[in-house]
Every structure is written in C-alpha cells, then in structure tokens.
Length: 413
Ligand code: SF4
Image (cartoon, rainbow, N blue to C red; front, side):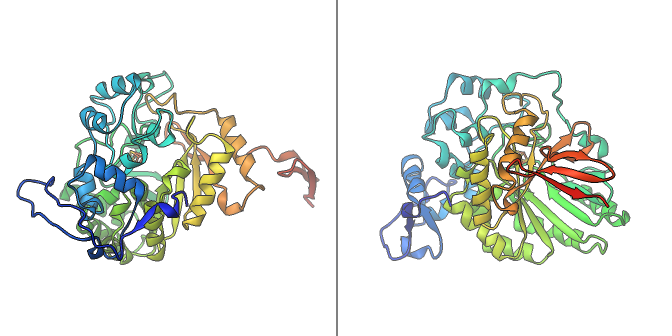
C-alpha cells in the first residue's frame, strides 16, 4: 500500500479532546468526544494536518462521516484557493466551467493534493486546466452515443445480454476526463416513475442477465435508495449478476460503512467495478475500504483510463496493478481515453497503450495485466487491443513471438 504505516495514528488508547462540530449547520449539536470513543477508525498524519489547518473545529467523527465529506466538498474557486495556490491555467479553466463538467473535490481527496505541484497526477485528475477548453473536431459530447441506445430514461442497452443503468448524475469528485461529462454533474434526477419504467424494461427483456448500475456514482446515494434499486432488480428472475461501477473507495472511502456492506450483501452475486488511475490513490483509507468490500464477498475489478502524464508509462502502470492486487482488486480494463470534448491533453497514442501492455505481459503476474480496449466511437462497443505477438499464421502453423522476443512455433494440424 502507498501510505506509510508509520504515518497512521491509531486512535485507540489516547484520550485527548479532538474538537467540536461547531462548523456544522446552525443548531447542530456540539459534540465533544475523546479519541478513545472512536472505536475502529484510523487516520493518517496527512489527514490530521489537513484537518487542523483547514477545518480546525471539525471532529474526526465528522471527517469520517461520508455525508459530512459530501456536504463540505470543494465546488468553487474560492474554496479551492483557500487550501492551495492555483496556477493561471487552472484559474482560467475553473472560471470558464459554466455548462461544462463542474468542479467537485471531497475534503479527503483535497487532503491528498493540497500541497501538490500542478503536474501532480491526482491534482490533474480533478482540477481543470485551460487545455480542457480546447475542443478538436474528432471530439464529441457523447462519444459512445449512449443516448441513441437508451430505450428508457437511465438505461443504455447496447450489448445483447446486459445493460447499463445510470441511477444518478452525481459523483463525489468529478474526473476531468469523464466519458459522461455531457451528463454527470447535471441536475437531471431519476424520479420514482423513471425507476419503475426502468425496472419494467429489465423485467420485460428476458435476455438481460447482467445489470451494471452506474452514473454518476451510485454510491453517493443513500443505503435506502440503493436498497430500493437493488431489491427491484434482484427480484427479476432472469437477472443473474448485478454490478456497481464506483470511484467512491478512491475519492470518498468513508462511504464504505458497515451499513452499506450489509445493504449490498443482500443482493449477491454483486460485483463492484472500481476506477483507479494512479498508485498514489491507494492510501490507507482506500485500502481499508477495498478490504472491507472484499470481506463482504464482492468480487472487485478495476478500470483505468490511460492518461498522458498521469499513468502513461510501464513503471507507473505496473505499480498501480501490483498495489491493486495487494488490496484484492483485480485489474480489469485499461481504456484508451474517450474522445470527449477538451480531452486532447489527456489522450496518448494507441501505440503507447500497446507499449504498456507489452511491458506488463510476461513481466508480471497475468492477474496484473488488464485488457486494453478502445470503446469504439459511435457506440461500437469495447474492442480489445493486443501487441503483435503473431509473426505468421497459415494452415500449417502459427509462428509467435514471446514477451522476451523469442520465436516459437505451434502446429495447426
Ligand atoms: S467518478 Fe466516474 S462518472 Fe464520476 S466523474 Fe469520474 S469517471 Fe465520471
């Protein structure tokens, strides 16, 4: 794991007063407590320093409350400038976000970047730069044409036996390269009748055996709403597996509570598709959230978008994949960055992606090698890409090159 264990301050056995919640809503109960009263949470020195500096009156109990994190998310240039100095490029970009993907950063994620340089990989993930305002002719607001595969609000039915169900447009952080930047962050909520229509669509389409619940980020919804959604999907007999796509363990690990695990556990087999971009995201808090999910019996997979200057080299990618396995997350997809508006500064060449896969395959465990895909523009679906290992293939034999460059032959007959 990335976080230095020595950094982590165990809260057991100490009795000093930590603070009060007087920065909460007016009228909120002031809540003095001692560290011994917090039973299981731990917090890093990094967090303590950030908390003391920018939320001096906030309790650790509040900090570890995901709803507090959401309520105190950074959404304006004023809030962001209060905790870190911004470059001219960042200021200009943030001032021109109207109608675009908004700015939103949880205090937890801010604590990972507030002292960073502009080139820091986690900072680039969430703070826009002026290049985001430049749109090229190959970019489109809905590059995967999801809206044209949507039979009812919230559902995208592109593949024969599975659907995407976007249940919210809200995320706790907004990633600057988000494929759904045309829709996430907008105030377009699904109402109860929309949910009923979506459940009805799934029930009527007996070919659907796999439902991917995504958004936005579904884990920004309350346990009660998630329970309502999962209950209604699980009662449809032909649905075999349910998946939830989320970045919450990376950006809001406080959300992975016992209550959430108990809610989700009722609906197995339930897979969780996580989204990681860089090894520095795997902090002690994130690792603990993923381990909790793994202990709940949810198979965990990770999707990563290939991003220029963030993870576009073999060493970073290998470190990320290894750290994911250490927290029981299986690398699943490596995506070529979609052609969304203003993403040119994030996109690498396809050759770069192939070079990374070539640098992983054979040089590390097969479990650490994700499938590199392009999600075909226009809605053609995911297309896997492999480095060229085939030298010659005819009716007699196939001639192959292995990871070391050695040539091998296998007979066809
Ligand atoms: S968490 Fe996912 S849906 Fe939300 S902004 Fe990031 S990539 Fe987009």
